[in-house]
Length: 305
Ligand code: GUN
Image (tube, rainbow, N blue to C red):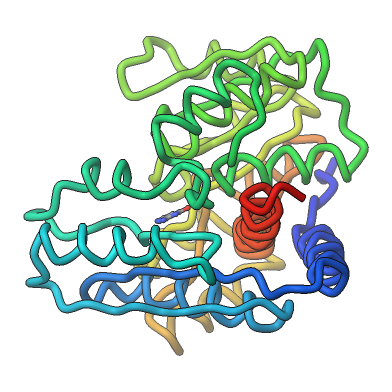
């Protein structure tokens, strides 16, 4: 049996179409400021895509880029100035930040009503209490994939592997809100496969390439792969990719030096799962789409629309 592929492409496009239509209707241009520090190549790619998509959907975007040696005070000043600007509805500080920066203090300085990442404790608290909140984009995107693919969540056992503030914890809150029974596993979980094999819906957000194997997956489970990892070691490829996929992946490693792999072994998931989100082309595409949705949402809320 081969799993049904849950492509993020059409779903992300449908969400972006909705956002563009909404932007056309509201009669002003929502603005998103993205703050990036240093030269992390992955961050540069993600921020580029966020800024480009904002403009494509008819919104205003500003990309503020700082050198690695920017100070805590300088960054706090930047956030404070963006907080007070009326043309900026959303503020996103791309993570990770350099080691000398206190990330928590920066994120807490963002006005909760402009916090389009949903990382501010005020939004985290609101989400956990089931109040209206700006919700982290990646887990919100996972819910969209499930709903728009016609997968029932209520009453299902959802198992999340990973307990980060960006994905694992908010994912648990959102699935709970959809009336799933939720289990969170992490690096100290004993006998992980025995728990993940109970999952109707398995969400992998650990940050380790191909970590979730066939033995972790119940026959016909829905497997959502949130990971994005670079694999550059050619010798790992035959274990990760099907015979059909392998030549394309090897060619990518040859040409670019790496290929993208999630936290799930795609070859084994395709054999075992009932449905599976691919990497690339799955959850990742939803993250940007949900950021666009949050930006319009923040703009409307701030203006009482
Ligand atoms: N770095 C990796 N994922 C994210 C995200 O969703 N938001 C921000 N701000 N930084 C990230």
